[in-house]
Length: 151
Image (cartoon, rainbow, N blue to C red; front, side, top):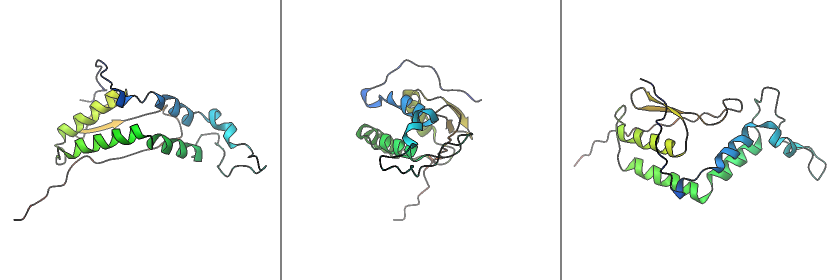
């Protein structure tokens, strides 16, 4: 059975206030909002960043810079490290990532990001943005590798 993220009472903490992401995603997916950034520079030379084509299929340097700026915010670094540490505290083998999958779904709920679950038993697929170009795909494994300890 495929389901969307469940509705739940908001329990967002100050560490999870990513409300600014909506405006950032909007600026990344709306070519008009970055149009003026691609005009001639003060030196009179046109920017080397390619223009947004009719289908929106050209990646712009501004988008990469905005994503990096968001990723480097201290609160985001702190948050992602805490999630990574919680995942590593409970290693689970392939198709057995029940706790890990639950943790990821709770974080997606906190961020108000919809997702599909289950995919291939414990997998999750989440989407952020408008569904229109530009598209960025990220894939991540969440299973641990079995380790044989020799004594």
